[in-house]
Length: 265
Image 1 (spheres, rainbow, N blue to C red):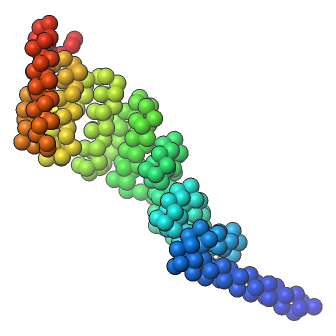
Image 2 (spheres, rainbow, N blue to C red):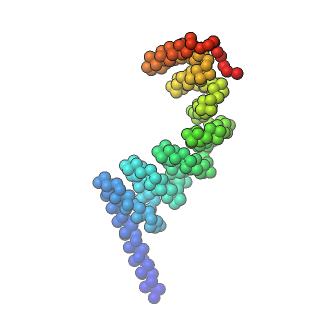
């Protein structure tokens, strides 16, 4: 009797395994033929069974690749990466998939609220000091894009207290300057941008920090300083005609102003 039951169980498991393998092979065949949506349906069958074999995770990995690169189906891609995060025994793979989830929400779906949740999950997973600063930087950007300027600035200030490289610090300070511009706190923004130009001169030229600084001076009616900054960009910005046009416009504004003005008090 017991042998009979065991035999039935064995046959059922063998049948499931055979069907799972068949669905996986069919999915692979459809991928090779460019039938990506059909392929995902077969990968989904393998994943939903979630048998104790290598096929479900292999299916999720390949399905994530197809959904992202071939179909640009980002919501579906996230689902496959969530499966990997939940079921992979490889810590590095789980971390990579969690990063993909956060970045897809941020970059591809522009669902900044969801990206904050996912980057926060990354902060709870093993990470280096540099990665911690990068995650917090992404959270700050998400708040900035949602016009949550107070929270964005708070995240930046907190991040700047962490260990990070010059690239992340430059991005953080640049974002803080832009936040201050959005809040119309031009004097504070000027201090940030001047500091960036002094500490990171080459990167500042590449990122046109001087042009943003000139805008801050102009918004504060300090046309003389704005012109001075732009004159320093004559040989650094392409096309140069744009700089000349900006300078000419500022000279006209300064000429027509009621009187010479510096910073507003």
